[in-house]
Length: 329
Image 1 (cartoon, rainbow, N blue to C red):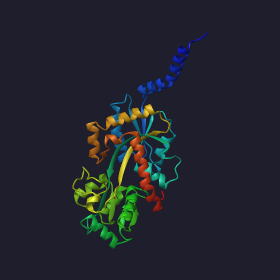
Image 2: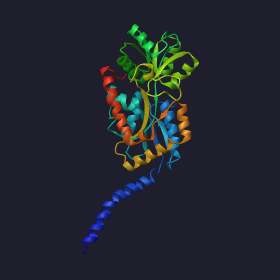
Image 3: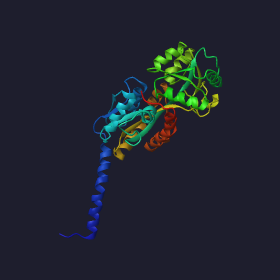
Image 4: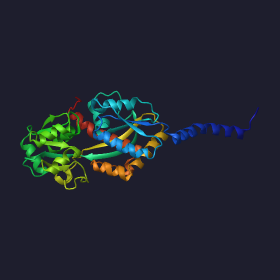
């Protein structure tokens, strides 16, 4: 049997189109079963709560539910590692943050590369930190606090949630930018160090607003500045670090979604679309705002934007962390 050149070209074109058609069909039918979202921290924490809120918003768009599974331990490394080892089929989604996908790569020897072993999906939310101090601190503003820290060089007790935690790394950046020396006091979490700050047992903390704002509002501690370029919607009366006299002292704990490396582009696009739709849902937005979270602008919710943002954060923070010789506990 012989075929004409025209028939041969038509058959060749049809064969070449089959893989693309197969990918499109796969993306259109995806997902056909529930998606598992891995949270690399304990149940009930802020990352878990935020992940569940966004997952509920995605359920309105996807034909299958997103089931949340918490895999805590090793500063988030166990859960992130679980995502890295999962099949790249779109049925394992990981939520991570500044600590898991930036800091941990600088302070731990990891069995995965936080930048290269994942496909980014979307940036979700961020929240700046607050510079707070015991109620009896004599300084009335951030410049006065820095002057007090300089006068008490090496003796001021600054609470942290352990080596490499945002309060610790933020304190290291404060030392660098303000030219001060402090004594870091590690705690097991925000609850214990806040108790000691309220009791006046330590002097300063660079803390998550969700943890310290209730005490600020109650008047049991002092707030000096938010570590961001813009004032917080949840606390508009607290000045930014730029306004308060320490320009560039920016620290935020942001969160994003990733899937394993090799996940098809069509599936990545489908998940990204579901996330973006969830983040414009008024109920989702209000619930996140109630937690003091600020949603990234829509232009920054793309996979490429997350990849670029994560890389820039590594380039900013890794030299600071390594110069301070911070090692994981």
